[in-house]
Length: 343
Image 1: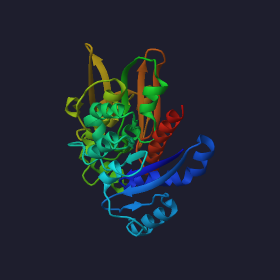
Image 2 (image 1 turned 180 degrees about the horizontal axis):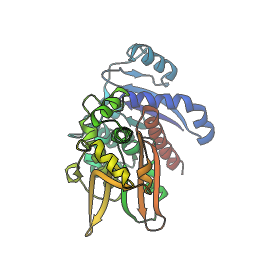
Image 3 (image 1 turned 90 degrees about the horizontal axis):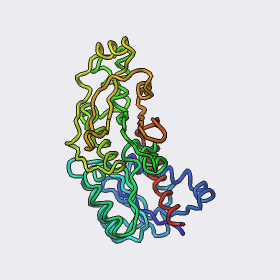
Image 4 (image 1 turned 90 degrees about the vertical axis):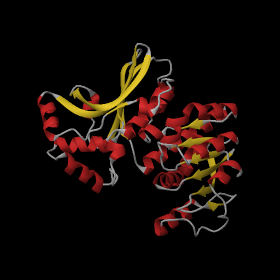
């Protein structure tokens, strides 16, 4: 079988994804028996491209590198993302548009449309999974297709797959994690003598923080990822506003140094736990003893610890952002679909 793939969204993640496909094409065929054609890309800003025989990935990459868009790719351009999700002859829709945590749009509509039309979906878009996971998974099951979303929590670091597949059979009693690299970078810099404001400026200079860093420093990004973990791993039904949330803007250099003197480090910790049989969640700065693996995760790295009955604590550390890293998450989800479809 040659898998026909359609890509919605051609920003950093979409571009990372096609680079991963291009670089690994031979390996994917030889090692996994996975053959594909990327037949369409839909992005209202970066451009549309379509070829029933499969797009030339090298040409696509050359165009976006040289011009910042793919509007000059030859062939059909008069279509949109909904047309791709609903009408084009694709097996898998890759949804890589930016996250909207208020409504989930336009990604939510893209994903629903694709699933309702019996297309498998893989996505890196946090909004739809955080806001409408139960609805979307019900649609997927009804139409006998897969919905995969590894890249929504720790990018290419497989937190969701570890929890749901590798730890299957374990009772996960609690989850703690560093789920936002920007805040971890800032706290690391503050430990090295930077003030909060200087550390934030450095994060912005390096591209780790946005011009408006609110989503990161106030804990919203980590809270969204916490909801995804709670609902998809622990079968909860949490909403974003159910997460007790506090960012790092109130942390001073003095606080960081004082914690170190006492053998502790301050980290912005996402926590999911059970209280009287009810699953609860929080995102807030916590002082962790230096013996805790999470306390020693520095810079922009992410990490997560699953507290289990059979294995005790299982900690996973890796990158939590990046276009190639997130492209890898999308690829790993596609390979999961490929494997199960061959059985």
